[in-house]
Length: 303
Image (cartoon, rainbow, N blue to C red; front, side):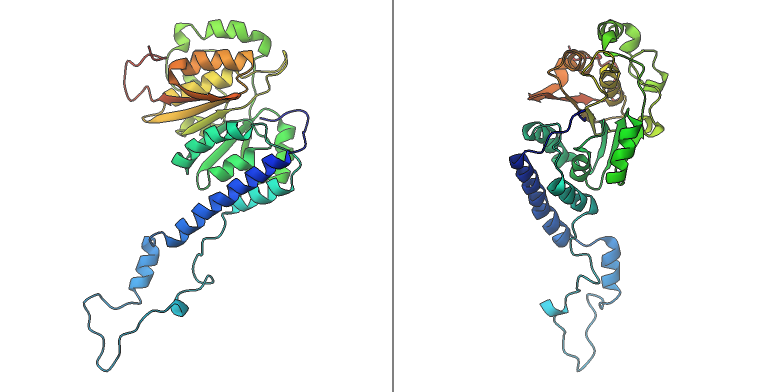
């Protein structure tokens, strides 16, 4: 999710990102202003208006509503910019750091968020693009899992609204080949709650919320995996697939970043399944995994 070195943000990328947020506003604000009234506002209006079939009192002329008589913004919501989106605009206008994904890579998950948000979005990793994901999922719940506690504290000081949790991993990149063989065993092909799984790849120490919520999107962009002693993303990829399969019904969109690396490439194809892969753009790969609980007998990977 984040790199150890920080690169100055590309001006063109910044302009594109800012333009995207403003386009988002163009569609969001009119929808909130012209959308049908909520039940509470309808109730309030009916308490001040006579019944539909009631005649006006004698000698009283019918009233007409003019533009000047409409409620002002002081008494009614006027489609204000959502706080998360406002924070994102300010953050990305003033930052010198660019997200780790390219615009084309971001567009892959953004298209899914446009259809599904507000939704439940789980992200392995906390980085310079975290505020963007939260903003794109405005009104939903976006949770970040991060291995580096000091990095969480640093981000929290800058962006206290983000929901993030510290997690630990007990694997190393050097164990990848062994873990790939482990994942082929029968106990790793059983679909269920990761907390009760007998597979070594299943992460059992995540926050309770991770296991109890049905996630609509999962992004695997962590933990660190670019050197031999790093924990690698073997368990994160396997667990993401297990969580997706174990939902009660429906399907989960899972994204894996850095698939140009051996671990991310092999483990995503093996445990998220090539048969569930929708597309790849640059270094990001998109899978759509259906519930295995909704249809008994479904194989771990499609035949």
